[in-house]
Image 1 (cartoon, chains in turn green, cyan):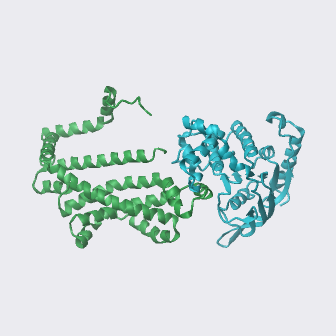
Image 2 (tube, chains in turn green, orange; image 1 turned 90 degrees about the vertical axis):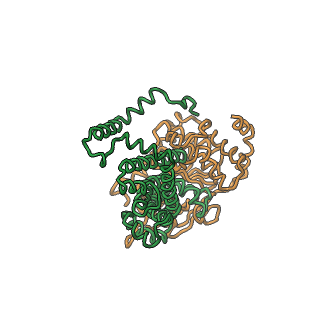
Image 3 (tube, rainbow over the protein chains, first blue to last red; image 1 turned 180 degrees about the vertical axis):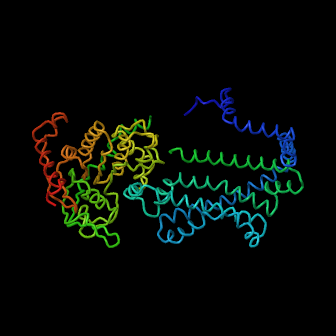
Length: 259
Length: 281
């Protein structure tokens, strides 16, 4: 039990945090400066303060949250679907000869395909609604999840499996009792790799097909010459991405205390 | 803390299981193991027969690559022999089973389980209830001087401690036969010696049959009642040497005794013939 850690922020913590983002702050100041002195036309780059003001307005009237929620929901639904399928396929491809024979070549070919290229195809087949978007996110995320699950499963120390079998674990229980827990770090890495893919696919699909979401909000900004809205959407997607990434890391820490 | 004390007061529960255990002999008859990859056939073990009586501590030494580990994995049931039979108490083995327990050189602990979780694993698989499980595990954790480390994960332990956990884990589910594959090979000398002595104590107390693979002649002679020497590739039984030492004396005296030195030299000579090129093979 670590009781020495205080919940509140120490002054040193704040300074340390600020120091760690020095370069970021510098860049943002440069942005404000360049835009304020009209070194770049404000249509291309409105001042940061304008962008933040727009961001605030859109957040205050609920628009931003509504769009962010749409993007979040699609990305998460697709990612979740990809995890369910990808982990099962990956683990079985590594443990079962027939599954390996079937899936290995498919995974190898599917992994490097830029899934964005399938946006028009999915619009053809499934339309522009949520289902179409979620399915494409799932397709895009499936590969990294499956390939990482497969590789992690392959690398499970055979002595662990043997130890378990010696102690009476049946073949059927082996996956749940030993293989999946042993492969868990690699499996979770796959999910972490898939997360930005989920966001990218959702964002691009929303730009192309509309239906709300941060991608839609951004492209709307371009079409109505509201460049501050473009950058505000960008900030929103960065916040969403950052939060989800941190969330996953936290979850990883909780699930894998033993690593 | 409370839990630990209560269990220490009733060690007889877990011990009674061992009192009735007089079986556990291994009979290996005309064993042969051929590895096939493509057109290539490699004979790892050939014409190998030996009987290990119940409760015997058998050391197995041989030049590297002689198939010692293959032999152990065959007895464990991890590998399938090409011909011949391996029987435990006259029943031919069929794959891995809880009548045997393996201790690996690399410990093979479950990293996602705590020390307690590792030691209770085999009991969970046997369907032993939680309280009984914890009690039995605690007994072996104490036996291996691991009390206080129950909630630690393997990554937090040193090599010597990991091997003690591995031993406790194996002992906890009470196999009749211990199969040990160079278990102390990765440890430094003092640690190794203390674990060797620990193992002898446990072996005496629990009356297990032990097959102990090592490349270290001193270790084999020090621990075993009988040492089996294997020939170079393909591995077969060259000879067995009975070790008759006065085990009542402490280690320091034992290793200086004439019997120890003579026996060690005999085994060493025999092994040397196998390791020197231009020897028997």
